[in-house]
Image (cartoon, helix red, strand yellow):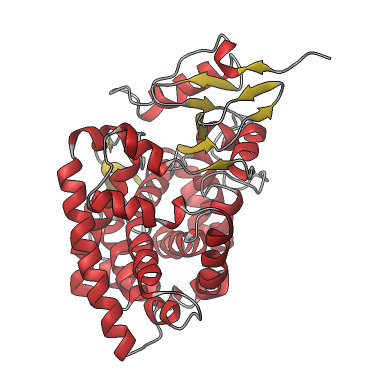
Amino acid sequence: MMSPMLVSDLDLPAFDYSAPDLTGEVYHRRLAEVAEQGWLATAPLSLVVLDRESGEFFLRSRATAFPGRQIADIFGITEGPLRAHIDANVLNQNGEHHRRLRALVGPAFTPRAADRWRPVMRDLLKRLWTSATCAEFVEAFAKPYPSLTIAAVLGAPASDAPRLHEWSTWVQKQFDVRALGLELPRIERAVTEVNEYVEALVERRRSDPSGDLVSALLAADGLSHAECVDLVVNVLAGGVDTTQAQLSHALRLFAAHPQQWELLGADPGLVPQAVQEVLRYEPITPFTARICTEDLEHRGVTFPAGTIVAICAERANRQPDVPFDITAEREPRLLTFGAGAHYCLGANLARAELEEALTFLAPRMPGLAFDGDPVLGGVEGIYGIDALPLRWS
């Protein structure tokens, strides 16, 4: 029986996920080309895992963890507000401490808990809608909708939604290796400001509880004040920019596939399947990092402790590479929200927001088409869209 090979001894293809032109179809084509050479590639700061089986293995393994602290160390972030935020982030907790936090807050993030906010989402969608037949969709719709939703979920005033959006955008850049190198002071300012805001919000809800998420977390037996604040900051930071990006890509995909949009407008029952197909075809978290906390063997290869891998949700979701089709039966497990112990807490809320948006928009935007070229963002962190001009009849 052959002994496992060290991953460092393998002759692997290279993939640069920080390349400046890596977006749109160029990004998909390069990933497909490198995946044809095998399930593993090298990248500037990590290895890249390119198939579903291996992606799930690393995400679910108890011998891996999210490498937030290690990436911070690489960029010299060893102290200050961002380091404190990274150290407290539930993503960077493991073992019994992580299991305790997830057990305490889990009831606030179930499908039933998310469904409670659907009437609020519908009301927000009605308020955002106008009688126009063209718009820059990101600014008009995809940007305000999730920030207004998160404001309602947290029990914050709707007038604070623009600030919540800005903070979310900047705090999320902690996962963007390019931004960490170029825009660290702005990220740190956002972390400081959002923590001050959440501290005040938690204190208000402690003396005046309501039916919002902050009140539910305060009622969780065994959750400390600091843990409550950290969790609310995480929800705020992770629940705005991500939904904005995924909804923007949804409308971009449907503008590129008008027959699919027509089907959706005629049959609202297709909405859950349409959301699943959007999440499959264009995941806005293309790469999810893990670090091996001990020597790990997989597929005859040894990954030494300290090895960082980036699991590629785009390749995992797109195997096999089939066209965008909201009527097709698909593999139900996607890696868009991760997998295993760190599966995204806000996944059910995000799905509810996307389902309500598509249910509302599809019958009101017949003849959906591009009204100019979309301006796509990079894929290093959250894969978003900066501008999406659309028209409809």
